[in-house]
Length: 242
Image (cartoon, rainbow, N blue to C red; front, side, top):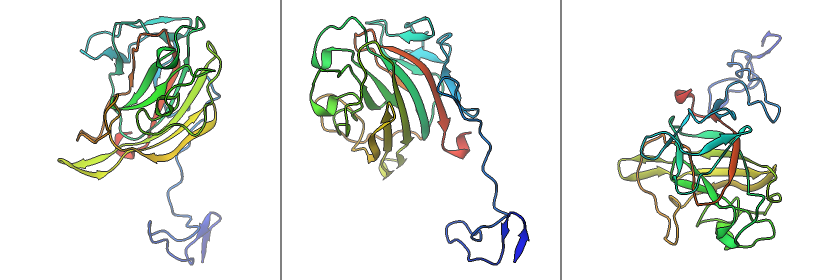
């Protein structure tokens, strides 16, 4: 039976939802105005729009000590990592970065920073333009765990675009109920497709999970290089957090 112009009630029931196939009574998707590459989508939480660091803090809870100029933020070496004041669970993340135009060093010593999901799980930022390093430390890598499927980084000084889908791990006390998963695009090139993480990321140690809460901050790394960031926003993927 067709109930209106939108759908039907005499079709089979879908087992995961309880709705009919083509059910016109099923809730409509939320309307979201898409962005255009510079303007975030209408339901995004904007974390950096080029104006100030009011959404960020140092790891000690004090003011973020990086600088803002010409619409981007830049690492101030030896001031430490910065993190968002807000915490997030599963998210869609957009963040843009550029390596210094004054190229210095090689390997891990060139344009090094990182995007840490929940403050614990690093997606590597590095100037790997004609600059090889160990594969699981390459730009776009899940640091210390998985190399990216491609090196899609642009030349030093040019802007790169990360688009990341993060699924937070779940714990019951000390027990891991669900591992973390991440999908990563760099400059529209797929680097990881729902990759299952082995635990939190670290340097020269095997990854393992350390129980934590369902939300955490986004963190950017001070590794001593003048890496720039701009246009940072997230969309919460857990309806309970919206």
